[in-house]
Image 1 (cartoon, chains in turn brown, blue):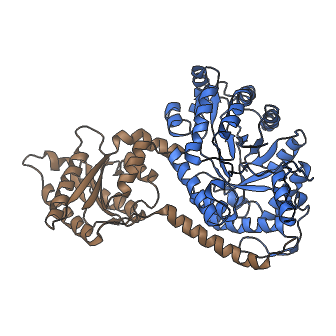
Image 2: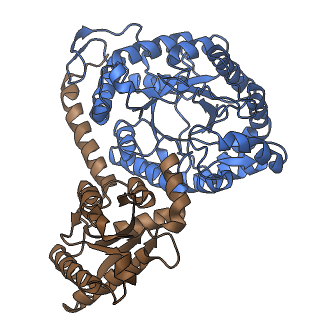
Image 3: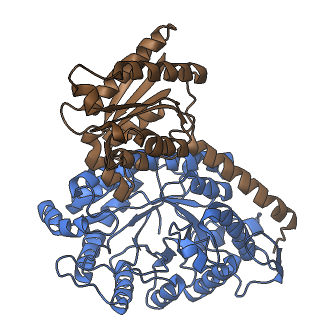
Length: 214
Length: 377
């Protein structure tokens, strides 16, 4: 069983970003099914978390819903992250979610990046915005992302190859997921503790010898 | 004083009153802190603790000066900090300042150590925030030796070496002040407190109970692991955050503008959301009593409860009214109720007197004092 978590930064109802996220998820599940791997998926819509995300940024405190979203990401074996392109980048809400996500959460996490936008001219948003951010967060970003423009959803004569692009990205991501296997969640809490124990033990060594009782 | 200790901890912020837009001057704020501390003793609280900050809009950059002045005007109150920066202060100076304060205050002194999370402060004192954790370990290791050894030879990474250094004055009665380690969110603090068998103070007030439960539980487990006693004998303190009026609706209405504009959480979650997620209690004294008694459901029997009262631009008069309510209606009930069902082997918070008794008992193992009142100074 592979656990997929899907993040959609779409704002409207219906949302083309959510639509793209759902299509990619289904394609990835279909790819994994070819290798008899069942994949569950959990969808995180960022819109209802908007206030909580900003509150967490201001106070450092995540409410229960946001905490649940963090856990859902942390427990995943792979992440599908889809944002609308705003002003030649990811949306501020999408970025803010990752700004408040606890550090190390995405360490070693396979991630498929995708974005929607009004025009194909912004397709490099995947490469200049999403990919560097996830690389910085130590995720393993799949080489193929998906960018869908208004044309893909609305052009006369149908989509210009979106289904094929999704299929190609899903195929790549499924191979990455299979290679990575089920993910061991990194426990920053325990790692910090181990490091502190090491420091304390090292620090107390010389003083023990030199202790003078008064 | 048997059982729990109750006190207030002050950040020392200079914040405009959102109702008037007027901030107190620095001297007004400093004098208000003194008035608040004296009032704390008058209404029967046990401890007053001040923060340490080195930048506006805060005033307490020199905590032992403030506490020494308060010590001269109080009789009973224990003077403490919340927190003393173990990273950016020279441990030699911390040792000197608090030894001196102990002598002046007749032993009514302890301190709470913290790292400090304001990046720019570190270089002002020749340090680097990226070294905060190893700095804490090294500085505290030295501080302990300075208070326990007559002549100290020491060398480390973050400070010039010491050759044949002797602290003056020596700790009062040869007993160092009790040390708490204050934590907002990191497990390292619980570990260092447990390692040395010191107190662990969970700030508590910006976090959900699940977080505090985990931190306190970790500290108790590690305290036992390091052989200082059973987990429920570890020394735990918690922060609290209250605003009271006899009628809870009045409390909410009066506190809301201060909450909404407070420097830390203002313009963020609503008062109701924050009160649901954190220990903040805005309501009647009875609501404060009920909420506070609930802390022990997840922290176990503990030793020290602090409240944050003077902040966010609340007028001095209001803060003093809060202290009256706390002292008259809340603390007496908490003192009594926290004793109910408290295990006999759960210790009280260490005081200078109790530490002197322990030391005396250790020095003369054949004759263990049981009078319980033996102040040595």
